[in-house]
Length: 77
Image (cartoon, rainbow, N blue to C red; front, top):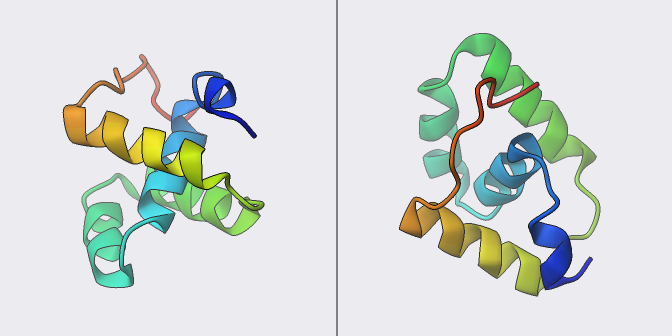
């Protein structure tokens, strides 16, 4: 996966990569703020993650820090 691939990822995948980048306590706190169904989707996606290119991971974390990950109508279709 390259940097260009990060722009093609779904919001669900980006959320999973972002949460997997955090310590467990912080990730759990964020998941607890989601609707139960959304949290379950993100958790399933985290479990399904393959190896993530560190450059892609950095790009996704930077997007979340800047708030540049615009939420789609249904953030986890």
